[in-house]
Each structure stands twice: as structure tokens, then as C-alpha cells.
Length: 177
Image (tube, rainbow, N blue to C red; front, side, top):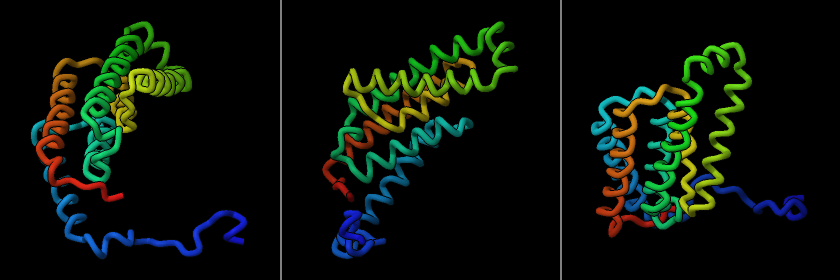
């Protein structure tokens, strides 16, 4: 049956490379934790869960698969930058006085607007070759709050900081998958 369904003959829970290169996994996990700590200290306190999730997911990509397209500076900074632009634009519309009063009664329409922000972001990232999946958290974080210059600057700085950390650690990072 497994052959007909094209399933592996046995399922592995632990990556076979881990036993041979466990030190590499431990070092990169430690570096990822330090990188995330630097971002969180720099950001001070990240109250919005979607923004924190977007940044945390970016750290995972950078430290697990550093050679991937999504881990490159163009995608990392470009994806989050586009997410900030799209999310901020939607935020300015959604939080305008007459619109926000109208949407308070129509939660489904607000949800549709948020889903549309992710769809627009995907399209723009694909067209500009800046695909970075964690940017979806950033677009949702910016779309669900009133626009704020300090949050915008902090997130941009945190993403640039992650790109710099990745650049500095590139000689020491290996793909773990």
C-alpha cells in the first residue's frame, strides 16, 4: 500500500544528518536564539503577535536554510518592506473614521480585507522576486492596527538587523535541511 501511495518505506523523526553533524545543528540553533534575542532587545517590546511571528519565522528561515531564496537579503528586506507598504496602505483605509465604524459591524468584510492584503502581498512579492513567506505576518500585523511611524521604523530596523546578522554569520551557517 505504501508503494501505491508513494509513501516512504519508513518514517524518520530525526534527520539522519543530525547524528553526524549534531554540533552544527546546536551551534546554528544557538546562533538563531542569539539573533532573535538581538532583534527583540533592539525592538524593545514587540506587542503585536503577528509582527513577532513574522520576525521569528524569518529567523527560522535564515538559520535553518540560509542558502534559500527566502533567506537572501533581497527577499528578507524586500518581502517585509513590501508587507509594511501593503499593510500600512490597508491600515490607512481600514482605520479611517467612517470605514472603521462600518467594519466594526461587519467582521467578515474586515477578514476579507485582511485576506486580500496577504493576496496582494503574494502577488507583489512574486512579481518583484522578493518572496519571503514570513512577511505575511508583517502585512497582517500592519493591517490590523492604526499606522504608527515608530512601529514602522522599529520593524524596518529589526529586519535590516537580521539581514546584517545573517551577512556576518554567513561563513558559519550551513543548510540544515
